[in-house]
Length: 334
Image (cartoon, rainbow, N blue to C red):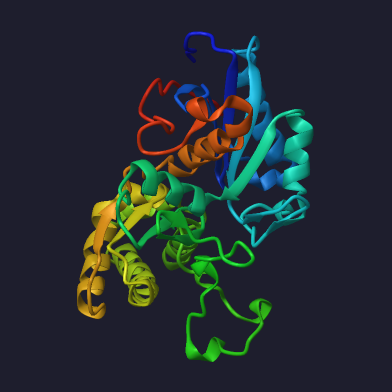
């Protein structure tokens, strides 16, 4: 872990994911001073996962204990509210977590701002990354879960309930029409890293559940696994094409943990977009494929602290916003 020259104020960004939690402490301009990543221990439930994230953040803050924490920006799977998190099945009990209240209790006196992981990631990509200057644009998150975010007029579309872009709940077939969520299979249950791992494990009849990364690695010499991935890409393409037809984006940027296998995913997605969309958008790998939600969380913290820090120090735009590539010290913990 490393720290930068002491300043009066620091900001905290946290990204709560289904399998890992990332945290970073930055200066008032968003330049990262120290970062850490921990396993979410999702099998232990929401309280354990939340506490692990808070502990990792507190340890980072202890390295800059002489500084004032002005704001906390948080990205999370699901849709965060003060008293709950909607649409958050990745960790048992996360939907019952009073996330806003819990964060304010953990960091008293600091301003708290929250967003979904995909929307935070889209914010980062639209400001400093692959979607900068693209209007409209789409960010597609392929990770433990599945979601998208729509950028228009330089802003991320939130929706009335904060649920714009939650394509993981898309209907998968005409037979799903009229069925309540608990009576059908949402898209995310079939198209996500977790879903791919389960489908591949079932196809092989393996006693040990594979990870998505292992499925991609093993597929090169296993036709059965290769077919599973083809089916995965085809179903994802179906929904991505429909989203592109609806939005007519300039560009679609793809991020999330599954982009570690981007060269296996890209050809099928590109071909489907070229064939099915009247005006096909450009398809690119996100500029921050693995940590865009965390960078977006930093941006949230910068903006939340704007009044407290003064506009000169905290203004977020292409020239004065967070600089995610600078002073990017990382500490990884089990």
